Image (tube, rainbow, N blue to C red; front, side):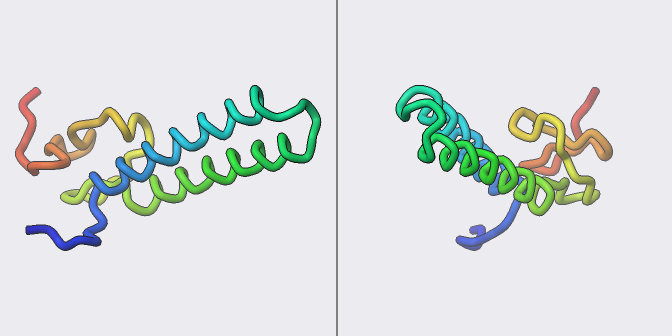
Length: 97
């Protein structure tokens, strides 16, 4: 059984997904719900950029292969195997290609 606060690749994927959903919600709220060029719109835009920065930090910190240690930036939400060591990121088995 994994520890409750185990920081794995799956944890990083989940947090990045939530942060990107929050960025989309903040962007839509700033475009559709508040008056143009108001203070609230700028606050929502700055918050969206802060969430993008937080997502990049999470990718840098947690989205790495647990077997070879390579950081995986591109396609972090869709990748199933490490591009360097060709192991499945969840099970650890070698992927045949």
